[in-house]
Image (cartoon, rainbow, N blue to C red; front, side, top):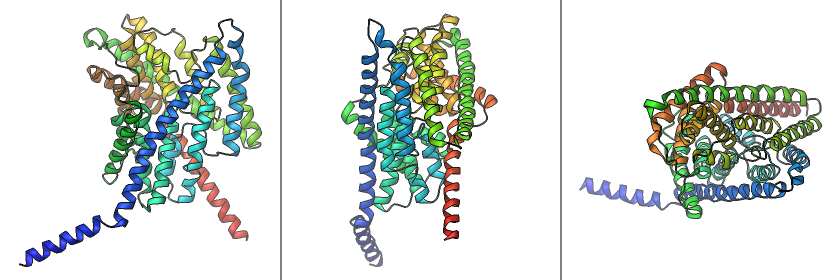
Length: 450
């Protein structure tokens, strides 16, 4: 009798709990936020593709004279993006992944709102699209991470949810998953790059956000692989020297990119300190002009994300042997210019170029060499080997190359660690953390004076 009474009370309590608005409201708001990330990611992708197509349509004249328009369009576009980011959308500069990492380390909601907010969602998407319209060598995947993290942080405020750090992680993972249609890579990215540790309390949030964002993306675009389906398979008996070369050389170039980006960014920040806005615009103009010159010299191959070039290489079309050098320089200049934009897609294009060139040297197929080059270089840039091979695996739909991609990624990561000891995104995130600390101290000083 006592057991029946106890069981009856537990059932009533469970029904009351699940019927409570306090329980369901946060869940519904969270689910709506995850779906919104998927929908906005798709919209972002469509706008980015249209912007690139429009740029190539304007500058791709068969008579030749319009091919020089980037000398005006690209520097002016860089200056416009840098000015808008500085004046109206501070915190939107660069990839967006360092901002999301920094926000997880900041404990005050006001500090987080300077780098993750609905205002920055609008600014990040708009300015990245403008940058692609002007020919910048940037991607939309990193910005989608900041967009996803911003939306989830706002969800935490609306739903009264206390797990801000976990929600930022979930939003970041959902952004990567929706941007590439790579749900597994979104989860791995959250664990390896964003969190650097596995947190059992947030795994449900991450998985739910990735699933819902992925469903929203699939509902609009259907199931697809980002680079199509790779048909070629790495044969270890003949191709193991290529695997090693792509891993070590790709990782070396990736580490060089990271090292140069960090050193240049720090020097530019120090130089800009005396006249922040004016010198920011000067840097943007110089970088924009250099990107335009490189783009014209490459026949337009280095403008934009590099998606078409990377996909062509994966499908077996060799790239010019010097393409990866030009794309490397264009991506580096675009990153240090101060305009919003990511490095994921350009890095994959550089890696595909490295692999394509090494494939010619080793007499291997271009498709498999491009995949290995992408894995080695990308792992070298971000120093996240699991994310590198998982994301490439999901983007190409060929699971026969798992071991080869893992080896190339690990070799790239190991090589990068010997050259550059600071992971790029985490080093850049410390800039935003330092700015929050300075802002807090300045506010404290003003209060003390009052």
